[in-house]
Length: 116
Length: 113
Image: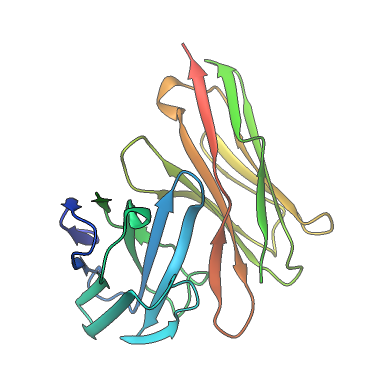
């Protein structure tokens, strides 16, 4: 089991550029979550999918953020255009259950995004 | 929605002492309470969890206790070691239609050698 795989590990970009973060969940897990972590706000849930369908995107900050899950083994989080306040660590997590409280969350190693 | 709070925000203990970290939640229907540990620069990892039908669960040096009446649960670490130094997050589910975990802000535990 390779765990949840995220890429890139680090991303530095200039304000206004498009950023795409990628995630491969653990095989067999049918729920996928995107979190953002900052010192000020802690771990915030942005969006989660169940069986590739977005269930709750109420945490997505604004229209600049979008997420897709075209199949069970791949998801993307896109920010367009990026702004300095988007700088954070973005974690992807997956779980076997239908929701995050039926089974444990397995986090990826995160993507550290810096927008200058 | 669920509101999860952790106190204190930092805790420092001497190696070998016990550490207790408390978490409160607001949704009385919540029934699952995990604790995650995040070492510096690494990902959060589940260390222990408890469901509402039990009051306590142990796993070697760590334990979690749950008080449903008071709506709080606590992480207990005995015989602390320097490698226990990390940020610890509690979480509780929002029991609405689209159930999801809400995390606390985290507590930084420092174990002094």
